Each structure stands twice: as structure tokens, then as C-alpha cells.
Length: 468
Image 1 (cartoon, one colour):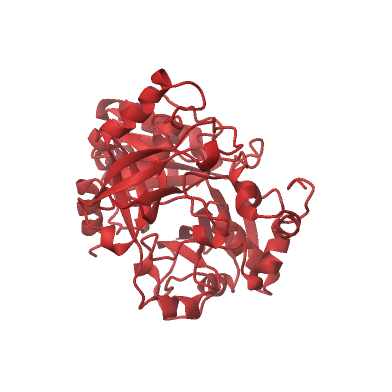
Image 2: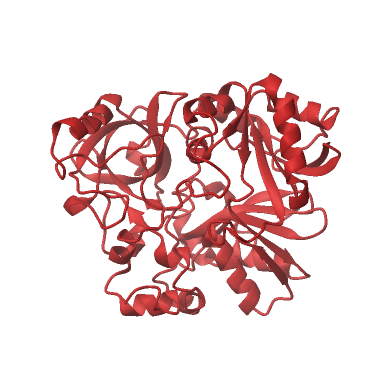
């Protein structure tokens, strides 16, 4: 029975033989499907160069869902769900909120803002967003919930706030010019306030592309005036607007954020009521799994916080969902998040099959700059003996480095920079029924392990700003 006929995710699970096989054949990818954001404003190569060489403008107004929580129990709820500490968390602060299942596996993460007006705003993909909303509505908390759903869910629904990113070495100079004077002293991941085109604009100091910059946000009615002022002032600073293609690659080289882990919600007995609450039309029910890694057990797709580089966020100073499991895991060996630099010769050899082999005998098409073809991309990473030692997730071509990079989670013995591994590219058995997957054969692509973030300037920048 199709997910459209099932009323909830749990009803769907009760009706299908295997959730992995179901998700492997789903069409949802969300790759570059943002309203009013074209694939390219100029060309994605120069748009990538801008965040490294001058300044890039990212329009995230249609991207991610904003979930607002207010009321006396808002922080209490998030403390219950988040692995993070909430000590000293107050208005003007932000943090990356991570939530886990009772078994200690990641359900999702997002950026949590403590707004000056006292509300809490969670900006995230559906995984953690739905999880928080469910508990807010069913947990008996004294909380008011407002949801501004991302536009891929309902393109015709107007948004309430805009969000822009200005990133690149010229971003601080441009922001000062727009503000008409020096920026307020704001620490990393803190919220400040400036004025642009006579409008009050909030900004979060951080660097999505691993370079200086800020996220700007304010009421939707101010969006066009603020954007036009940025574009006009940015001309002499080499500003480029970033389209959907370059945008999706920006976090790989500069931050090392894995945006799409499979949410760990499908098997826990304690989460049955949550699965009954989730509709069968949710991303959790119709998102696509893709790649060469395959297991009939959905739990093999789950990640721990340490797998994703979030181990430092886990704080046992409060009680939260998954605490007991994470306390047991804390002393165990953990997989390590790394960057993989794909061998150019092997990549071009795979591309060459488009010209030398008949349909069905070619390698899986490698699109530029986005080879990724599923919402949840999981490619097997092998050692030199052909044994699986990890999985590669989101991937993209970087014009700044002339290479395809991917973020992978590997066994500790293979995590040192310079280690040689092999990535298996293409799906088993000739491919799934996803629309973006043609019949193909699997090929091996050599890769070299590198640090996260990959860009050295990004690593140094993060060390500097987090040193406060």
C-alpha cells in the first residue's frame, strides 16, 4: 500500500515489508528545489569562488522551517530533548541543538535562537523540527507553538521572516558599510542588531562557508529593501548571489556539516506514539535513501552524535531523552567524521563510460556540482582489502579546490589525513526506482582522507572564533 493511503508513518510501517526498501525507491530529494532561487544566478563556479575570494549572498528565506516556542516551559522542553547544556543560555544566544532517540541515535539537529523578544526559534530540517513540535503538543507543557514551514512543503504559503547569509573575506567590510558604522561586538553564535536601508536587522555571527560572515534576518516585509541595499552596496566588493547548485555545496568544504542523516525513529518501541503522530506524507515517510551502502536493517543507517562530530555538544548536566544510552556510549570507541577527496582520475574514468559503454553498462551519472542523488546519500567506504569501514554522505564538486569532496563517517583506524580508501559509487543490482537513478553498474573511486572542515582557513577560523 502506498504512503498516500496510510494515515501515519506507523501505519505505513505496519503495511510494508521493509522500510529501507520503501525509502530506497522514493522520489523525494529536495536538491535545488527552492522557490524563487534559481540553480544559478551567474554560474556556480564563480558563485563558489565568491565565498572564498570576495563575498557571497545566500538567500535562505525559503529554506528550513522556523518553529517558534514561547511560554514558561519552552526551555524545559528543549532541555528534555536536547543533548546540549542550557546553562547560561539566554536571549541573544544561539546554539546547535541535537536530539537523540532513547537508544542514543541522532534524530536531527538545527540552530536554536533565543530571540530578544523571549521566544525560542528552531531553524531546521523536519527531523528535529517534527520531534520538538510533537513533544510540545503532546507532553503537557505550557508552551505556545508557531510553525513557519519551509516553502518546499507549501510553496504558496507566505513566509514570516527572511534570512540572508553574507559570507566571504569582504563580508565584514560590506556589513559595516551597510550599517553605516562599526558592527557591535558580538561573539561567535551570538545575536546582534544592525540597521540596513533604515530597517532593523538581526544578525547571527557565524561562518557557514568557513569564512567571516553573518546570517541576517528580519520581518518578511523588509526583505526586498534589505536585499536590494545589499546588492547595491556589494557591487564594488565583488558580491555574487548564490544559486541553489552552489548553495548546497557550501557546507562541505567550509563547515563539514552532514545535513541529512536518516532520523533514528523507525524502530524504537518507545517512539511508536511519535510515529503514529507523524503523517505518512512527512519527509520521514517519503524521503529517499540512495547510494552503494545497503542494509535491510534501518538501524544500520543511524548515527551517534560522535559519528557526526557532535560529541563535544553532549553534556550530562541535565536529564534528556537518550542520556542513559549516551553515557554508555561515551567511553566506547567512536567513528570519526572526515572529508574524502575523490581521485580525479577515477572520477573522469567513471564519466568516460558515458561515451564508451552502452546504456545500462555505464557508471552512475556524476552530476556537477551535485553528484548526490538522494535525500539520504549513503555510499560504502572500503579499505584496501575491500572491507567496509564507513559510509560517505553528502558530496559536491568544489571549484575552489578542483575536486569532488564528500563527508564520511569512518572507523577510527582510517580517520587520519592521508589515509587511502575506496568509495563504491552506484547502487547495487543496477539501481533503484528513484527518478534520478538510471540503470548503471557500480565503480570504485579512490579517495584520500582529509580533515573536517576541509578548507584550512575554515579550520583556523573556527578555532579562532570558538576560542572565546
